[in-house]
Length: 312
Image: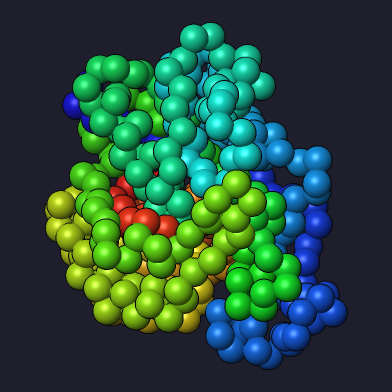
């Protein structure tokens, strides 16, 4: 096989909805302040007993069901997350156990908000190299475990959830070459440090970098895929902030694309944001099968990654 393709998607979000009005009873904020700055109306928060691997498993199980593939056929599991509490075993191994897989390779990737794009590229490359035949890629976060609920600059942003994609080998590559990298001098722009650390970020610095530098980098992903931005059927950026997403899509020149704006109802779910948003668009049939979609994540590290993928 010369490449891979995504054959199905799935997502999972906790039941509890945390609205801006409820947040206003917890910290000094209000709905107008939150929406005007980040565009978020509500977000989902996991229950205390709801673990990262449980959410990942639920999203993966849904994706496998949508793909019509038996779990035993999966030989590679990649999980993107930065909110796992335990150092070992990794989340991928726990998900493999929950799914009842055979003996898959199982790894975690931690590049925070760009994690899903990194994980997708890793799985694509493994299949291209013949090291895997069928893979499941998951982005999952429980940011609520690492949030300072007294800090209004960060607690209004976060949400919990998971999204997953099933990849198989393909004669016709449907996942374009990845464009990835990092900005080492901004490595502390988004962070969760120490055993009991809380999510912190230099929001203005990230905003400035994303709105000025990212459009040209994202265009490189289109060029590597042999497409012009106006040929894109969809744009699914990391759902960090609506005030970042809207100008980025405009500057990219994706005039005919459906632009994911799931941040409005899900908040910032870090590595889970791209697969959740993409899965919802496919589930609602807002992006037709076969349409090229730009996926692009950026955040902690500061790291970034993106590729053009054909929609299942």
